Image (cartoon, rainbow, N blue to C red; front, top):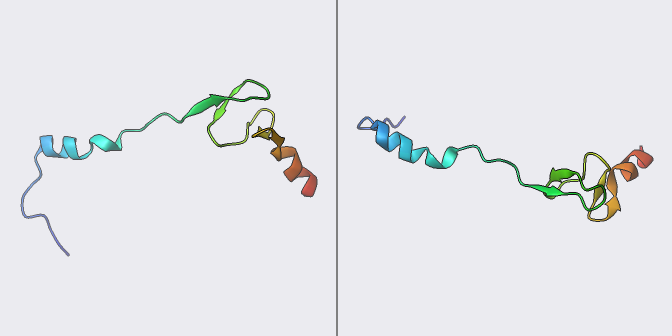
Length: 62
């Protein structure tokens, strides 16, 4: 198995891990109930996505 030849310094480790920060999810306002919801997800409050009621349609099939 390959092993690093030299120890990576603390500054190098910090700059290497700079892109690993946790980002907040994108949140938009639901067009139907005006509550915050994740971008490109069905609204957890009313079940609408892009003007259609998608969560109640899934429960009707079951």
